[in-house]
Each structure stands twice: as structure tokens, then as C-alpha cells.
Length: 323
Image (tube, rainbow, N blue to C red):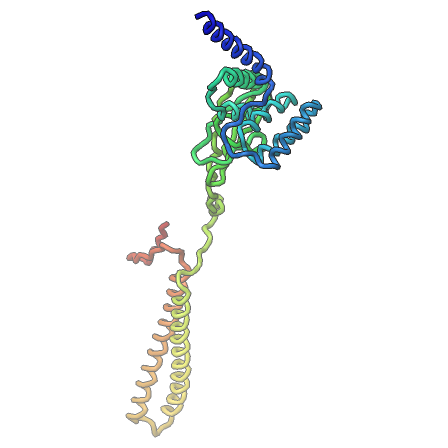
């Protein structure tokens, strides 16, 4: 009975000893990668070069190498390493964003070592956030992209910036901008509400102001064809009246000369010619009156402004304008 008990005790002691010896090696090992495809030869070479740069304390070169690795494989290990290196370089804004993604992408811890690494990453993120300011941007619907001091940011919810004054801008679908200026303090969070610019109204061309008492400007004729037709008809009546009047005057002179002869007394034909001449004179007078009246009416109707009304009165005519 004693020998089995000694065997069990020695096996337990050996297991404890192996666990204690493995702790320093585990703490020095790089953070475990999430299950993914095997590394390509290019990525593996970059990882070895980055580890060698860290051994030489060449932090800037190691950071550039891990940025190349992240561009190739987009792994949680790469983003966590970038956050740590940017923190050591004092690039607090980049480190805050990278460590935030690192914590979000880390799988839940399954072992004490993973738990310790998990707690370390959260502590690093908390220490980094005390060096930067945090903005929570509330932009209007469909406003994109969001710019901070002219720099494009990936997300409009939580944005890390350096302490100080910043201008946050977003572009609306109609081209207007929504902007706000905010003062951010280190270790504090600020809500930023973007207010859109007012929509610009299209200017409406207004007629020039007319001084009081100034005469109204004449408007264009209502219908050009009306003016032309009335002018042509008036001219036709006037020409006809003038021609008839000249012809009647010549015939009347000749008839008066013929009637002065002694043999023409009581001649019925001369009386008929005299009556015809009188009719021509009446027609010519009527044509002249009609042409003059038609021309005047054409001018009045064509040149009066729109909405003018002519009302007949007992003593004349009244012109009424309405707008």
C-alpha cells in the first residue's frame, strides 16, 4: 500500500514541477494566434524579421514589419502587435484604435495563460485611452463619409483623437455638409451632434423696383399679327379713299366745265354724271374716315398693356387698366 502511494505522490510532484517550469516560457511566448490557415512563407519571413528587430530594440522597424504582416493576413495577432508597438512609440491615437480591435477580436480565454494575456490587453487599452480623447459622432441619416480635421475615419460611432479642438464634418446625399467643432480632453468622451447646413433657396429674379410716381413701362404689343393686319387694312382704306377723291375731283372739274357751255343746259346725261361724281365723293370720304379710325384702333389695341379694358361712356370712352 505504501509503494503505490509513493508512486502517485511522485507523479503529482513531477507534474507540478513541469507546470512551474513552463510558466516562464509561456509568458515569453507571443500571443496565440486564432485558428486560421498556415502562414505563407512571406508572412513567416516577415515575422522572423520583426522578432529580430524587437530583439535589437528597433521598435519603428518592427512596427513597419507588423503593418506589412497585417496587410497580408489581417490576423488578431498582427493587430495586437501593432497596438503594442504604437503604444511604445507614443502614437496614442493609432494605438487606441488598434488595441480596441485587438480586444474585440480576441477569443474568450480558455487557460490561465490566455486569461492573463486577456487581462493585459485590456489594461493596455485602458492606459492608452487615458492619453486620447474619444468622440461619439451622431450624423444625419445617410451622411458619409465622416472626416475629422479633414482625415477620413472608418467608423462614425467611436473615434479616437488627440486632445484639443477638432472639426468633424460629414457630407449629405444632396451635397450639403454637416459639421461641428468640439473641444476634446484627454481621457474623456464627448458626443458630437452634426448639424446640417440650411438648404439654399434658388434666387428668383425680381423685376427692378419702380420709384413711386414713375410712369409704368410700356409693354410689348399683345399680338404682332394684329398690328400688321390692322395697319394693312387701314392703309388700304386710306389709299382707296385718296384715289377715289382724286378721281372724283378731276371728273367734277371736267363736268363743271362741260355744264358751263350753252348747249349743255337740260342735258340729262350731265345730271347723271354729276350724281355719280357725288357718290364717288361720299365713298372716298367714307374710306378715308374708315382707314383713319381703323389705324387708330389698331394702334390703341396693339400698344395698350395686357389687361386693359375700353369702356364706352355717354360722353366718350374710358380706358381701364387692370393688373
